[in-house]
Amino acid sequence: MAYIGSSPANKPVVASDLDPTIITGQTALAVAPATTDEFLISDAGVLKRLDASLIGGANTPAFEAYLSSTAGVSDATWVKATFDTERFDTDGTFASDRFTPGVAGKYACYTGIRLGNDGTETLSLFQVAFYKNGAAYLISTTPTVMFNYYSINNFGAMLTQTIDLDADDYIEVYVYCDTSVGSPDLINGSFFGAYKIIT
Image (cartoon, rainbow, N blue to C red):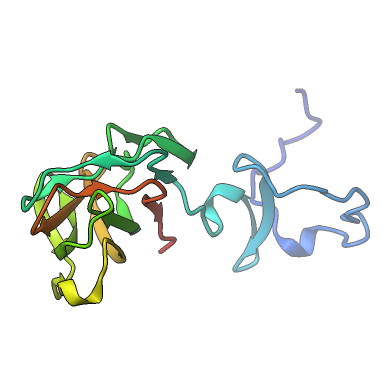
């Protein structure tokens, strides 16, 4: 572009350069801003663009899965729990009964497990654990012990923990159930979920 005389100097636009009556906000945004939407802010008097993705954050990746039908598990040994149906999985991070976040961060992990014993009243020991990268990370602090005179054939417990994960770390749920007769079952409705904490 040609100028008469010298070309204008480049300088940042500052808040005082704008007439507030020009920025009216006549059109309302009726949905949450997309991560690529931009805001105009004053940073110490200098106007700057700010992507919506830099404000706050989302609790994703996130998932929750559950067991849709009762499945047998080995007696008196730690075994990986199965969850065959997803309620939701925002980023495709849950597969083969394993959560691999794909994004480093702190994750709230939770599980609710119910174990039974083929309809008989012989449960004697029940524990739940989170395994991280194939090794025990958190085991329910006190073994849940059932005594036969309680006449109990199934029991449920929950375990929750915030776990620091790299992108390729993975979390699984393991259970331990000891029965004096028969073999235990992981009962349908048992669930496992996790979501990223905004920090």
